[in-house]
View: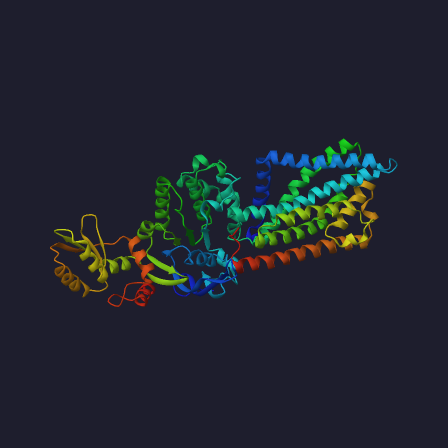
Length: 260
Length: 336
């Protein structure tokens, strides 16, 4: 794999993500402020209508949920917007003229985007915790173990959105709807709706919530938890990639790569 | 897989249909076949909607043909797309092929990265291309701030950085002002001189005449001519005449002549006639004598390639029976 120079392609896409983030600093700051403002409004809501006895727990859950909503939005919707722009600009066809497969370039972009936004998320979380004067457990080892399979599911959904964008182009309505679906996945605890475990990333978010909000350690999770986490991640990733390849084939058959 | 003979690109009987706006089937390419030899500069010409861009995109593996095949360096662009693409770089939509938020240099490095090449590996070549294309002083400028001409040059530089055997250029001089158009043409001249295999689709006929050895003219999704540029110019020269008259002919006599011959009246009153065969010259002379015209001189004219192209598209192919037919031209080309 590396002999094909794929690591150079990953590096190129990571560099591009960093450059664009820096070059559009006002956009980045406004994105952080938007999510921060939403958090503050929800925090005020929890403090105002919530039971004071349990509001500490609720705020911790809110902190984790808001952070994950940010990450899901970036991971899923950003790819849709980005590909819409690529089709509009004419760079999509150039991506397909690369010797590295297009799906792999998109995967590199997703990973790069998520890595860069994890740093931003850390800032957002710190700001949110300071505002709420509530602190979460930051167990780096546990997070580093749970996040990869969780993000695998995010990438699967992202591939699906990318494929749809290549064929249909105008997916704004779907992306807008998607932000509420993602909000539901991030905010609703599995304990309340167990069926959500079937949704992409929901299991991972729940496990992170237990680590960060309830102070659980890795040993608190059963083999079934890990199995469910990895299975959901792998299945959604595989389904998303398969759907992307189907959409891609259709786009090439209909000559849609260069059209907007 | 090996290529047949010296052909680097082999387009075989490709057909592509699209669903139109009213769901009607539109035939974009209908049984197109041609080869591009290694080191050849081929002009792929045709009026708008002729099927050039679809053909080019099939050669780049971006559109799958409904039938037929396109092979680049022996690799089918449909079944072995990535292997085929390894040999091709393209400028398909000019300045639209770039990331406008990235700088000139960042664009070069990014696209090279997606071809599996490290920034260090391409650093020297990037600098070389930037200097050659006059983009050196703009290397750190964001593409959005460049002029259209500079963006166009950068798009070509990006394609050249790929260092592929085949370079596909779709309308590289479209929409450029006179000065930048001149610069881009100069760059194209340099690229053509490098003995690289180039497929050039353009409406810029002086560029075709100067750079292309051979042209494939498509119209209505079909190949109407596949011939050497020099042969076409010679063919059309042999049937184009300019007749100088001592005095302009009356309008009704001109109309009478127009009914029999393809002619136009030049500003100085001379007649420019396109004859279909050698015997036609005598018929023209007889007709002029009958019209009472006093001849001052008659000469063969050298048509511009633009005129040749216009006639090819209008006539639906190379000249008629008195001149070498399309098939003969094709064979002559393949044999070269």
